Length: 385
Image (cartoon, rainbow, N blue to C red; front, side, top):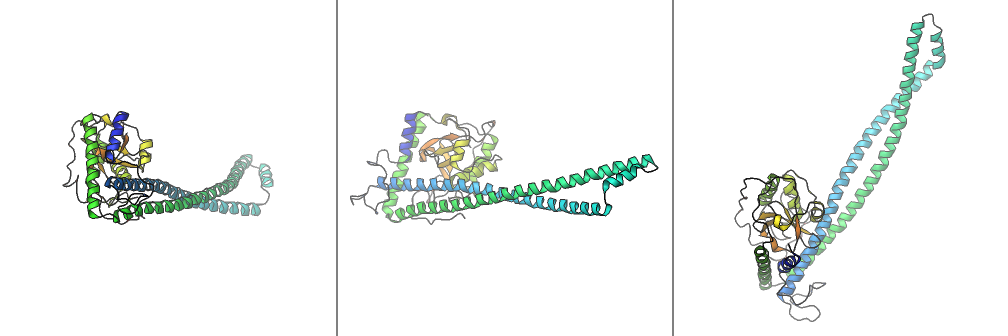
């Protein structure tokens, strides 16, 4: 896609290209008033503020998701080290028991070397040799017991230090996660305050302006030929897409990975996990770690990533449409690919073979429109924890 076309798509997708005379404000102004002047605010200006707040909330959500994923891995590491430490302590205890038994045997048998000399002076040389070999084996066994005790102590100490360090890391991540959860809640509170300040007529106008902007951007990208023609997905891509389609109508919930609700990257990561291919949890990681694919090579199941910071992601359905978990207060649905400013696309299965025969999944009734598609009254913030 050319740089000029991408700029056109991004401009149209945020629905402000032909409507705004100024950039978004730094803070949410009073309801119905413009910043500083007290003059009535335009619907386009309110839409810009609202989209910015949602974008800030989604950015904070993806940061929270990344920390939550790190915390999950850190907890698994703590559990692994704790289990290893428990086994090492049991092994060390066994070695110490064996060492105690060895000490008692040495005390009871006296000087082992003198016993060996007496055996060598015995009348039966072969018997003496056999007994000498036995004593040598006993000596080797005793040395091995001592080594096991020493090695077990070192291993136990090392594991104990690693477990303490891992636990400290877990506590630090948990504190960071709480801070980021509070940040998401704050961002969503800002959204709710702005929505609650608007009248029903203003909200209806917001929805109208946004739909108009999206439609304009969609027409431009479809008429440009920048998107691929219909391409079949791979087997895994088809499974991921069908899973996503089955989730249509379920609510968006920040930090959620299903099965009751999802956020944007929770939907994409779970869809591909269901298809048998694990991908990173967050949209930023998906953009950074998965192979890029040009828009004119898109096939169903590919991931379409949005905004310069890669803070939103959807699954490509085909024919210029995506399946996405759009934002708080909305439900999983089918949307035009230009519903948000495009960044690019990535492919979780670049090595997969496209299917020879492919039937697109049947969409449920109302998959592309419904009462929750647009802006509505303030939706309550749900804490995923």
